[in-house]
Image (cartoon, rainbow, N blue to C red; front, side):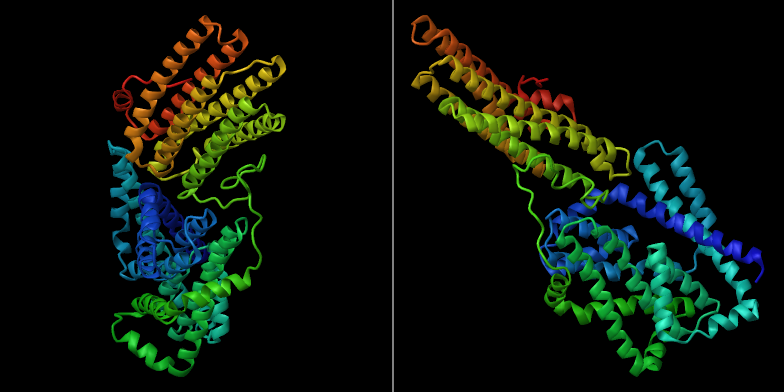
Length: 555
């Protein structure tokens, strides 16, 4: 074989892989957040999950990306194993769309497709046109790579030695092993099946061995999800194992069918395939559809098999556990499409710690419990750790190709983390006041304690509503937040006036009065920070100021 043919083949493969990567990443960037929302909403049952998995994979042209995202969802607790199984089965059908596109042999139009994409990227005035251009560029490069590989393979066909070696491959296990090995290396069954398609079109592989290579590709495609799950929780590993077991069992079933009916199967597929390339694409699709039809009723046993394969339970990280990240970080699966969901969950966990600590500090102010006071300081250290860790993580992922909608929300995440950290600081201030009150023997009247309790209840409500708005991106409680903000402002003024009246009447000592005034001011500022959190999802500053009716952000 001429070295130039080998070099050309490698170059074509490189272009194909690069084009596939550009196209998939661009689609994920443009539509990743929308597709993620679809995954969240429409996977309530196995059948709808399968349809979503099929569509999702067909759109982003990568079952590996879909299954890796599903593994991330399971790891974050957003999807259970039964829902994941449905999506994974659908993804296995969706991945055959790529080979169908390749089989139509539109490579001769690749330069034109590439030129259109480049024009959109270079001269598009709006970002959405440039993003769409990147998708088209990837598509064009992909088909130029196919054209290069196809030309190289036509030369291979003319080399008797190479042609004889390839055509002599007739061992089913060797074919399956080849498909598995190549797909595990390139991390894409679509790439391997496309290569098989081109070789079949040049009559370099027999049709029976193509079927076995395809089945090996299906098993090899599981390597991406398995690798992604290694750093995740037990259920994430089980989701990856569902994908693996589905393809292993499905391949075993197809082996039995082909053993008894190879000729009828080949004749049936050839009956509606124009050439050998179309045969490979159609065979790929039919094998996947057959496997899904056969195994869909057995999703529960598949899930149980994955649980039996990956035994044990994860050690749970509680809200109070110090200096540990639960949803993000080096020990958690990273996926660009789910990164922001996991950040939100970690921020929500931080907010729960801060809210709980505020109530603990206020309780300590009344009871003067030394253990509560010390616990406030310990939890505050943990909140500070989470502040730095989450902020650092946001800085890191801000440099990555996240979905467009997620990139727009990163700025607000920084502000929310800062506001929660400031709520934690006010809890620490309340603990300082409790400590001071205990040391000085300052006495707060029953009226003052009652007033503080009532104001704390309103502050707890506004924190709860604000976090619900932030976590769910749902403004249902926005008016409640605005009303509470105004009521708390008015309450702060009323309590300060009452405090001055008690001081003037000699009903309160200066030391106790100072503590009371500081705590009331602190609670009002906590409410301001909570309001900032609620309005973090608003994109336009004008809308924010108008809706808040004069409530200013707190620094």
